Length: 429
Image (tube, rainbow, N blue to C red; front, top):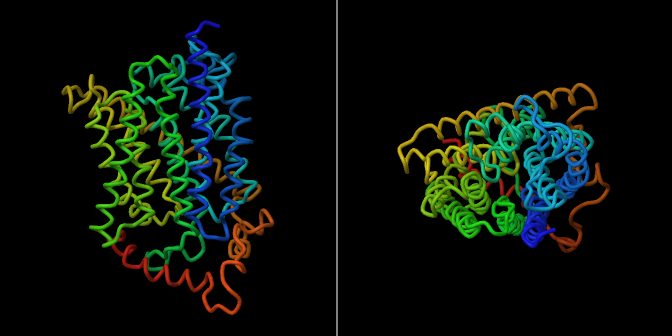
């Protein structure tokens, strides 16, 4: 092994660790945003991603993504990796990407999906759904890559796919009990722990440097610094934009919208982090932070229940970030060079992958619904997935409130729902 290959291998292993550490961020984020009685369940679903998903991708998916090209649609056989680093390191890095796509789905179906059904979804997504569409973009000979599509670290391949699979599965499984009223209004459920969700967002933000900069697969790359800076600037701009828009729209700096605004900036810059200037990264982040707030309202109007905002963050901003490359790419962007070809290719690519993810998830969800079942019973939903599926609560409620206290979780939930009525009315408007 040459010194260059050894250094690249070290770089990719370290960034793969950052990408895999993002699963801890997903876990804390979702545990903080769902209700108390389902915090353990969302954490267990992340473990399903890291175990069943990782194994499924290693045994099957990586060959469909990076195997020898067949008709520009999928790969097969031996994995073809870059010549400048260890194949094992390359495979490890790609495992992190595959399970990230699946983890996007987890939050959107939280609080009512059977754990067994989720495991089936994880296996099928990591084995087939994600690898096939990603081959179109990243695989040797993939048809979207041959057209010139640019998706450096996966705004479409990972986030658009995961976001639209999340949308489809949330639609198939239906909303949580009492989420929507007959008149179309929305009841907002109290999240279990906003500081915990914030910690998850910070971990995701940290891991995203590995996600984007690691995608160079080259420790010698001249654009490493630019990628890292663009990643940070877009996230900062997304969070700032979400704060400003939430104050203007809701008359309060909404913490969950701020969290999702920063994450939306990260999602949106993922496609173009190596192709756009830093001023473009800021504009992309500012747009994403505002877009995620409006998109959350759009999802509610569809009567699709997404407890963590996965569709707005990943699906909508995955599409936007991919199109932003066609606008701001320094060599081919419409707004930077006047060329329209790349924007049209980006539009085609993100539409096709979104459609692939949505239709595939509709099929999987419908099949599960008719076989093993996809949704827990109403009694189980009332009790909470933590006790029913895993036999343990996330928090000991007796320790949180002193004996004889008149304040319990139900009272706090009612207080929260009253406080959020104005916010939801603004979204509906």
